[in-house]
Length: 463
Image (cartoon, rainbow, N blue to C red; front, side):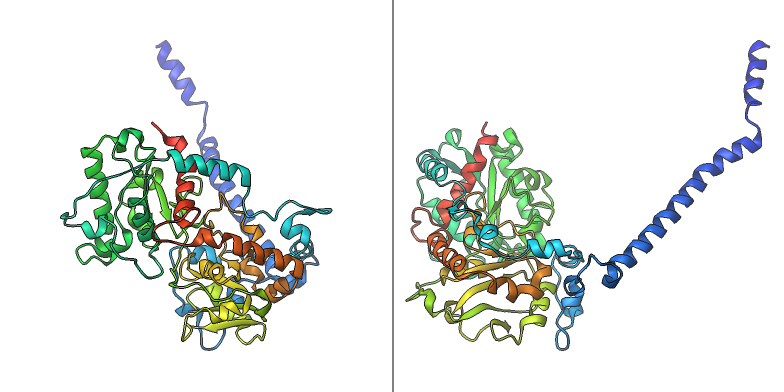
């Protein structure tokens, strides 16, 4: 009886009205919070989208990317969108303040880091002495084990290097493989290897009729399954000391069925952007996209460069559409719709600056083309993890411009003084050798620079 009376008493502590109150209280609070948030978003969005309503915004530079799109013949709805175009290209409707505009002006201090009469930011390397010393050690002791495959393998065309010099815009992965197989970095003893190379070619897999884009992920998944069961090395680190190369953008989905490889393995890829999930700058390596030229230009004299800037290409992104809208008819910035009849470098050789503008993907060969022709590259590709950025000081030989500053492009470039331009052009000539594939590979060329990037990543995963 005692227990029953206590139980009954406890039940009577909460009358029905009291229970209803606690039932509706959370619902009421949720609805109230929602209304308050809605009101806040509505009022603040009106303020930010109407430049005239705030004295701190400058209407001339408060653009959304759709405001920059080329009118008439080019419809933004017809522009191709990449995996990251929708988010990266369209989601940056940022207001510009007067203080920002002042900070964005070019000066010797901003460009080169001048302090009084001391130049502290004109060196092409972040730390020349450290790089040169560490490079020697890399050249002497770095070892790579390549998973072996026989010439009669059904996929030898995918797994073994070519016996010819490949051509085209995506061949960096093929030149790297060719150079590595013929280098002193290769070891047949996996116990002395720092890293392990999976030699499949994403480019050849894409074009192989047995695989193609549809079966690419399955091939990679099966390949990793096979080496992880035949050899013990993958399982020791979960693939963290393994790497592969790819220059085509399809590499972004190649590892989707092998999450462990995507998260752990080192990816040497041309599509290196901070914005795409699956690329990790501290782990992965930005591979330069290089369209190998058969001959060097006869002359790279800067005094003959009488045009301010040059770009030619398709309108396959909102960023390029914005560029053409503002500069297609300009007399100083040559913006050509489509490809040129001859790609002999004539236009690059007569231009001070050559524009790399993000297209369908973040990467093109225009950066390395600019360097090849002695033209200062202008990077219009937000979030691009530039090649060899761990080693090279890109600020010393290029100009990086934000998408939203496209309307100010001519002003920015004309604001670079003769002294600044001279430093940039001089450093372009110094770094050209780092962005060249050679057969056989030469010291400090693209192959050796890529090997050094791998060398920097080897210590954290050594077993």
